[in-house]
Length: 355
Image: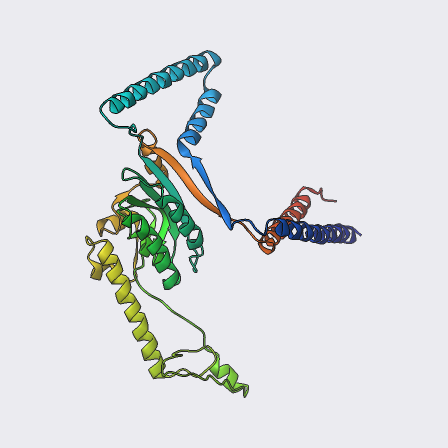
């Protein structure tokens, strides 16, 4: 009876989920019709100076006793007033000297790239770079927090080209690797003026790999023929279902080698300090070893780098948020609903007293 009771509860919840998902479909479809004419997304900007200041104030307010907290707030306001007065005086001095626009603090713009095999985040990156290019000044800097184990050559080639647009503007580009920048990820990183990495971040993998299964013998054993028709001797070198030849394999390997040569040339052009022959073996290095072979310039996390700039720069986190279509919204909503439902069932099974 207990099993039937639990099964009935689960079935009721499953039916509720199905009904909820159906309602979500209707709501999202209606919303998509209303917003069909809108743009593909929007840019979000957060000033990290303010964010870190608020976090420090929260910690201070929680740890200081009321009297000391009051004194601390008073001292901080006094310091801010003094700083504002000094900045105003400096601005007036510049105007008096003939500068119509007083010099502002340089800005550090922070971008993120979380790469998959297809480098699908390149669509967001290109929007962010396009937005930045019209606002960047010579004194500004761009920091890219990069995480990627690599993927398709053409996709990461495009991502690298987006970063090259920043370099072409004459603005300093820094890439921070907290976890991994390997293969296509390093192809992107090497474009930067400076690469920083956490001590145990994975760096390198300057190599090319390709693999695919072949089912020809299985199909032949079951008397199944596969016809592959091509025009052009090397239109298809290796196949999944057809019979592969030594000539096809040699051509495929030749194409891989050529891609590797281009990869090595790209790294060497952007980081002339490296001994490309010794680092292009496909190996990876931890951050502290990568520094020894000049794949990175310094050992530092992105958080540390940002906090070092808070006093001297206006630090802005920039994110392009794409507008999701109703199918994507539906998938996310359904996934979250199922996750919550199964989590509740699991929690209930843990807390139910044993008979």
